[in-house]
Image (cartoon, rainbow, N blue to C red; front, side, top):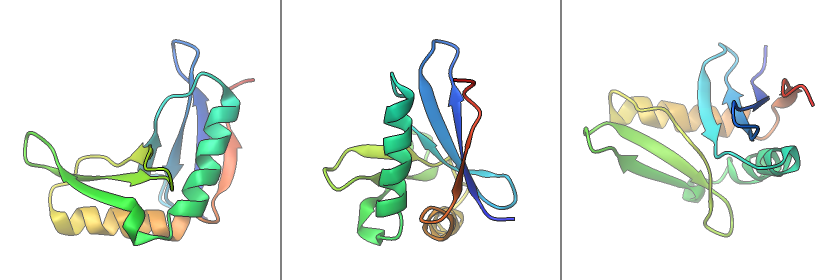
Length: 112
């Protein structure tokens, strides 16, 4: 099974998506969008930008855990990763987004 984007509606009526790897683990979580069209555009931006290593910003949380954000061509954050236990695990997460991001199908579970 390949990875997929899952669009959902949040409790406050906004929309977001998760990119899931083939093993169903979430590898990227989007920002929240007022309209579903924003989430769909965000997915297209991930598909475009995820293969390019320069679009990933590697960061460390206040609790010293590595994570990354994926940015669009205009520098806006499209999505962020979970917190990882090591820099190597974070790099594996980036690799998974690079692999799954460009071709993953979309599963709209927003109910709209």
